[in-house]
Amino acid sequence: MLKDAVKALMPPILLSAFRRLRHGPPKAIESYRASEYQGVKTRHNARPLHIGRFAQLHERHCPLDPNVAADTTRLRHYNLSYFAQRSMHVAGDLAFVGISYGVAPRIIFDLLDLGTSSSTPKGGGKTMHLVDPFLGIRSSSDRSTLAKYNADMNFVRDQYPADAGVKIHAGLIPDCLPIADRFCFVHLNTGDCKAEALSLPHFWQRLSPGGVVVIDNYAIDDGHFEDYAAAIAALGVDPFWMPTGQCVVEKPCTGAAI
Image (cartoon, rainbow, N blue to C red; front, side, top):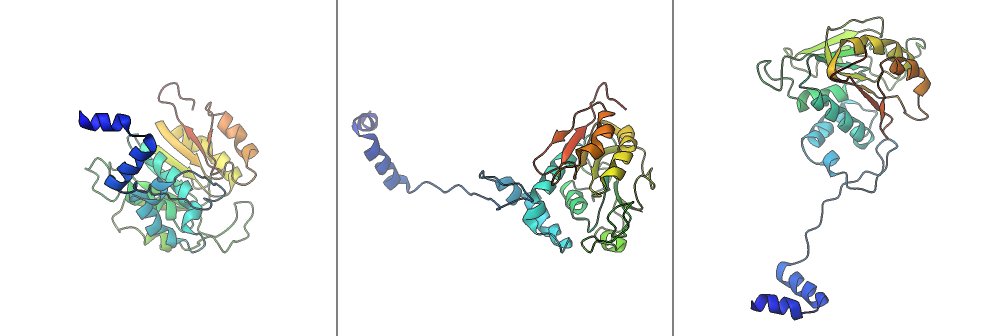
């Protein structure tokens, strides 16, 4: 064909110029990057964090916490949302331990459509358990208060419809346990690593096979590996470290250690 003959004879540089004139300049690829996601930097395109349903919900609910900019927690919340979604087919409820202003559970409540009827596949009759002493304290052993923590339980309660499957447990772990019989997803984010390590066997025993525990402060800053080492070793699984400082432990579907 004449078209093929012309392409064969035309030098590549002229052929490229001809195509640009015919089709116009190539479309720019949308690139989304924050300068930093709480200590994590990337030169790669972070578009899924900034465009789509997760991004819309993150930006809607992040202002609940007046102390944190949206991009600071964007990647951490993205990770949480992924593992919460992944665990929805597993039997049991969701537990968020360490709530403060409640941004992470509020995002996930909407993302997973947990406000829908229990007869729908996404709602699934699951309950979200929110655990926090709402005292604004550093830890169970250090009762000094930090202004960055929310101490008003009603601020969190009022974020949800009155009939939502959300239960708030005002207390310190492990003292306030048990809170439910079975879990599919557990998020530990109290900043009290020793208390979380003491509570981990309780949550693991009640975690369904295929369920996930995300520990937010496992490797934050210099890391708190020694606080968790014995408790995680007893589970018989290896933690999956993430650059955000979080780690994930997933209960095997077969041969799970309890």
